[in-house]
Image 1 (tube, rainbow, N blue to C red):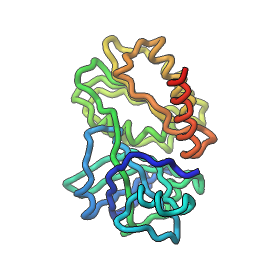
Image 2 (cartoon, one colour; image 1 turned 90 degrees about the vertical axis):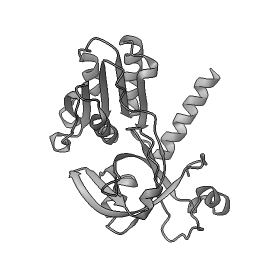
Image 3 (cartoon, helix red, strand yellow; image 1 turned 45 degrees about the vertical axis):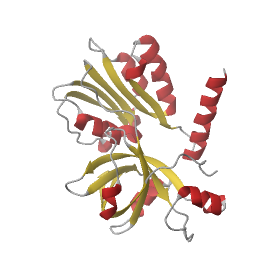
Image 4 (cartoon, one colour; image 1 turned 90 degrees about the horizontal axis):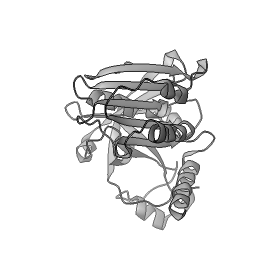
Length: 271
């Protein structure tokens, strides 16, 4: 099923500069070029874009416009969109980086990142976003899996100097751990799926520091749902200081998960 029409987002056309293997299952694509000047940063550390993946062999009208494409071409020729967080934007170096989880031929974005080469075009729509670390709280909680790791890494880098941070990150095993840099006073705990670690249990067992917390919790929808209830109902986290969302759901592709989320939201509004 093709992604449904959405509001018009700015299109940025970039050229891949290099591809880096960060861990066995994480690929970083660094892009730049003249088009980077048109990318307008929004100040969020969960700044996300839609990667545009054209259908091979299809020629699209210029200038490239998703609304025009959807109006003029049959759905099977529409490009596929996949959502990714901007890992970093370095204006001085002329670079924008996106990290992709790669598990062989699974999915679309991972295989694309594994196959792309310097000089290839990378088209993105956006950015969107809603979260950035606040200096007006007592401490910060960051929780996520591989899909949230780029946003967590960006958040750590943006932390106010000395800000207390507790980060719990679920990855496959020790080989998937990354070096994360921060000026905050951060305690980063890596959880390993292969060893049976449970991110929900780890958060439940966490000794919360005193004071007001700002929390960022993103990743697989199953554990996100459990933690939403725990943080709001049991820990008393303020709703306005909780950024929480399922980036993906086990057993669903991106279109199926987006449709399911939309149906859930519609049901909540109707009830």
